[in-house]
Amino acid sequence: MTVSTLESTSVHQQKRVRPNLQAWYRPTVSPEQGILLILLGSVVTGSALAQHWTSSTTLALICTFFALQAEYPLILQIKQRRSWKPRFLVWTGIYGIIALSIAFTLYLQTPELLWIYLSAALALLVDATYVYYQKQKSIFNELNGFAAICLAAPLAYCATTGHLSLNAVALWILNTLFFGSAVFTFKLRKKKTCSLKAGTIYHTVASIIIIILCGLNSLSLVTASCFAVAVLKFILVCWRFEWYRTTKFHHVALFETRCALMYIAIAAISVLPAHLPPS
Image 1 (cartoon, rainbow, N blue to C red):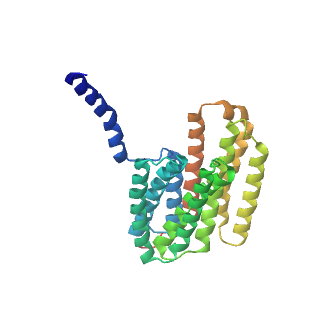
Image 2: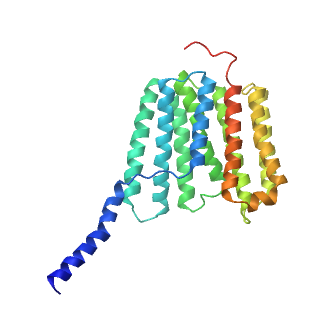
């Protein structure tokens, strides 16, 4: 083998190896834009219930964002089974350290946040377990994911006010039930999971839960009525069932996004007083 051949071979090997060596420092970013909308909506409704937006509220928003970004490469790594991917491990660590550092700072100010942290950790453990056993698309685990993201509402409230209230917990339940309703509409687009009965049962049970929360004065009547957006959405989907199943995903995403924005706006305004207190 000639020297020129060796040199050309080494050059080709460097070209092949270089991308792999550089891959580890390319950030992983969650592609789920809908999840970011739910996260932002939860923080907005939580801060609206607190009737203030402080530096702690901003820290809570940043903390939840990086926690969500840390979860994405972690789940990808779990899906790899026994194959370790440095990129996933590195960015899970980077995002996780940022989220945990902010969470610890907020905890020093408001120790009651520990209950929210423990709930989020439990939700992550459940999600990781379902992913490991390849059951991440189950209804229970998807609802578990929505519940975890919606914890951003009581987190923003507690970080802003310094305490956790039943109203904040009720708002978390309301947010979870609303955003979780998307599970039963999206699954209508697949033959294996297409079931109007499951969606009907879910919306009925969810409505009963919200009525109970309203009866306990944990939710106002106006705030509780926000779930009507989810019920109306489901009725429209049933009415235009064939269109919903066969249309492009882009149209479905726009439909779901508009409903989510409508809900967030109504829910946030409903928990605000007629006049905001002076800062």
